[in-house]
Length: 95
Image 1 (spheres, helix red, strand yellow):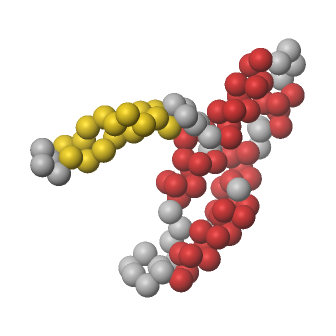
Image 2 (cartoon, helix red, strand yellow):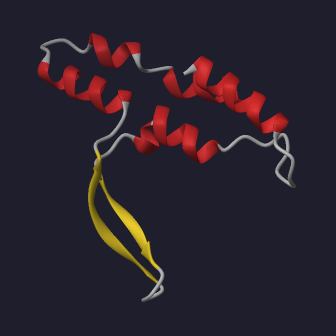
């Protein structure tokens, strides 16, 4: 997660358009936060009909999805406690 955010900051500073210096937070949140930690069906833009259509691909979640499923399988709640401060750490790295 740390390396991914550092690389996104590096690339944001190298880009040559109006968004220079701004990182793409939605992509980071989807990959590393509870916001992307759910199974969703992919959508594809259809140019001929000018609307979104459901695709056959699925987003199966991220690391937190895996950790929460593992925590539910175990008797104690130690895994969930380890991921407790994950959101705070992520936001501090982005700042």
